Image 1 (cartoon, one colour):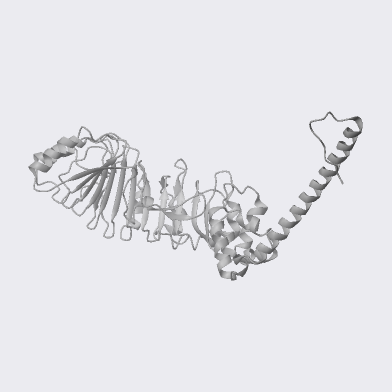
Image 2: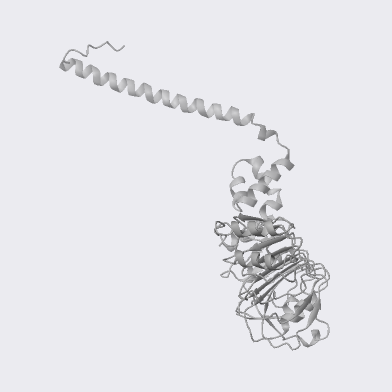
Length: 420
């Protein structure tokens, strides 16, 4: 038993020795109490975990949760498998959870193979980095649904991709043979985004029988050779969304071929050359959305002429509005002249009779344009609103950028494309 001390007195030698003993005794008791507290906490956690609601979840619900975790972080199955026997059995019995591996971050061939093996027969969405050989995917060629590659490289020759619906070729410096995208190799392909040029080289056996699957979404670069035209012609009747990139001015197709796109609803044209012209004429009887990136001036008509059914348009330069009969929403990007657009409408009140909204990016100031628009609304019989938005409201479901399969291996829809 420890004796009480009088702190008002100076301790004697005996008092000092007794206090040192008491300190050691108290510290020992504290250690024992801490150990007891830790033991009680462990027992408390054990009891809480034992009666936790998650232990009563059926397999299918737990499996769904694990799949969601895998979409957020492809490494999740590895961590989940280490939690408990029940969780390990569940994650091993959930093959879809193993189908979201990100090859940008998974550098181990053994670990990649483990994910491929444990994914059962589920289809894969793969972004193949430039530094990974295509042989990495040889064991799952039949299970690829989305594929993004830098170029058609060695190891791909002669292979067929029976389930690939979306294909992206990122490298614009390596030409592609038309044989590479033949419908016999990609029979169910529906979306193709290709930054590369196409070559005319066809295998002799395919000269008269070459075809491409009925694409619905196509992004293609125009080149001096006419191979790109063969791709567009091959899917003209099925295409719903088309993006054409024109980087070269010397494209001699005289007269420009005329193609009809009966199902086309979205058209985007990128013209990098000042004063450049589209090397083909398009008939688009059901076009709803039109987007143009060019350096053409106001007195130049849009690159695409058949705009009679367009309801929503986006320009990065001041557009000529004479061809728009049903335009409802006009989006002006970059530093396009709002005043120039309003001036057209004031000069000819019959232009764009359905137009009721002009949208501009938030970084543009409307302070100097409100009075101009007020004058337009006073003069006309209709009211046109103007608003600033942080992102493009190009919500058309068939927009080229609406469907993307990112490097995180999860296909997603982005209905608010950011300003370019």
